[in-house]
Length: 183
Image (cartoon, rainbow, N blue to C red; front, side, top):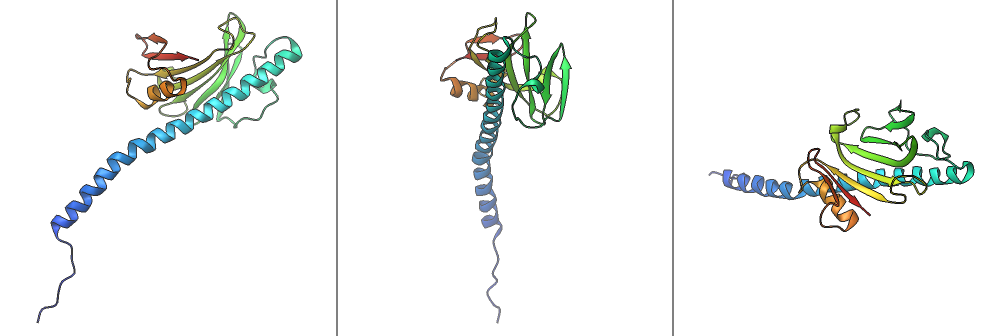
């Protein structure tokens, strides 16, 4: 007498693998979008913290500082820093935050996410958030979301569209594949 064998057939295993593949195809893009949205929320928070501290510094001294270290704030500890063109940039695993100088005056705070991690290569940027300071000589008080790259259906582009509630970018540098939304 032969007992019943308890085993899966090849067809049953293929169906299970197919179902797992379909679930992964739906879940992975949503997971990546959630990760990028979380990273964007981080750079937005850091940029707002730095900008608010710059405004307090301006009220106390009558000018902005060109060094983040001079501000009375706590932000994540950077992997490394750079003193380029008399202003500081903080580099993290995910990107950078720094002060932007325009006509020899600190004009804005910028934070950018990188595709591959800590580098100095501007071409690795994929998503940026800028705050133009209230007393700067460059569009005071404006906030800008930048998506870098030519993919208008990509996650960074979609994040800026959703963040600003604009259907298309206000500014486009097509030669550099940079799209900007003012809000």
